[in-house]
Image (cartoon, rainbow, N blue to C red):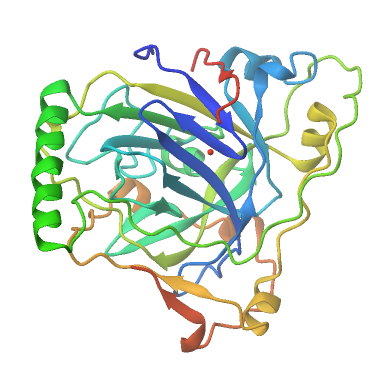
Length: 354
């Protein structure tokens, strides 16, 4: 599955895809699997490392696929933050090569009916799979082999795991039209001395606390590559979040990806073995967070249409149905805690066969 030759790079703890698309993987509180909740807070970013920088310690199949790796604890939740783009882009998000928006198998190009991508910068983040009616089901990490991942439940097998990203730019014709529209809107804004240009990025959710940084690196142990303790994404609780319907014709988007990347999820012990670095600490306890009076978030865009749920994703069961409840106490936030919301790149990330 080739691309248009664009490179993907790591910039700090962000992935930069061609076209200026920036994706960060954010640590967060795991929601209860019953009820519908406000958006949980950001607790700092997951660290990212290039697979090709660890040829002697990563599993052989990871070397073949290329991409990046990040450490995640069992049943830890995450969300994807999107930013950086200065012009519209279509971004596909796969979980085990199942589209997190449509529930369909991974596709080499944008599609409709059902829509298999999110539109940037309109979509500021994605906290889980599309469950429709203004909600998503939270991304939660689980090991492969139990059948608990979205991949396992939708396809009946667990082969890939991880997260897959693929970005598509506007066609040359659509991009010229968009730029002219921006120019006219900017002129109107200057005349009126007010207003903002269409397509400005939505405000990003502020992190309510930064996770401690990993410890100092030590030389990785000399060990031959071995089978990985691979992780994938299942689903947890439901939260209020729209996955926005694209208001452009499908023909506005290129059919050739500008860039793509495979994100491998690795257990903390494997992260230490592969990279020689200490993984982030265990996730913050959600009840303690709420008791401290720290904020949760609510985001709604009344100018955008939400995508309907798909049958495949609607049938996905939460991870607690597979590996049992953890009985973590839950204390819902008070109304005052729910807040309304209205970087130089590194070396290119290798891409392989997937």
